[in-house]
Image (cartoon, rainbow, N blue to C red; front, side):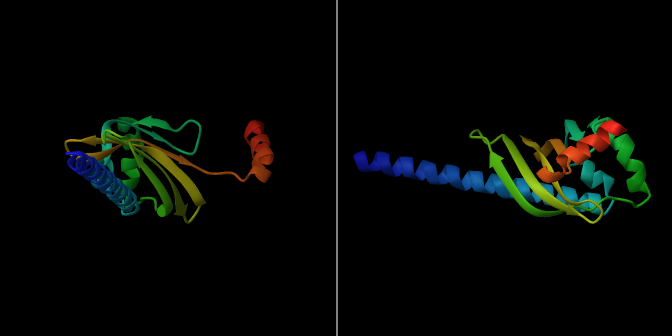
Length: 155
């Protein structure tokens, strides 16, 4: 009986590990397709990755958009065939113990801005993983931070 309990616990642990790895792979696939859709100016596919109450935080302090406001901003560019390309360089994904929430941070390279950081949260829905929040930032090296702060405050 004792061996059955140990076996059951080991099986449960291995199953949970496999599910977490499966969720991490699914989240990574969503984020990869999210970036691909933006680079191809595919608004329907891009916005299909967002949860209905999603928030997008851009690089400017004023860029806090709910989904409808972000669509109003981005779709005219997409309609002109103008998207944006951010290529993942590194990514860390974490999934909650209940398997319904994931959060991540990633380094994404953009031709114009260089290495940027994306971070955010995804929620599992009946339609799969959806981006609830995405935050794009421009990491500033510590040795430059005071100069950048001075330039921002001078505006």
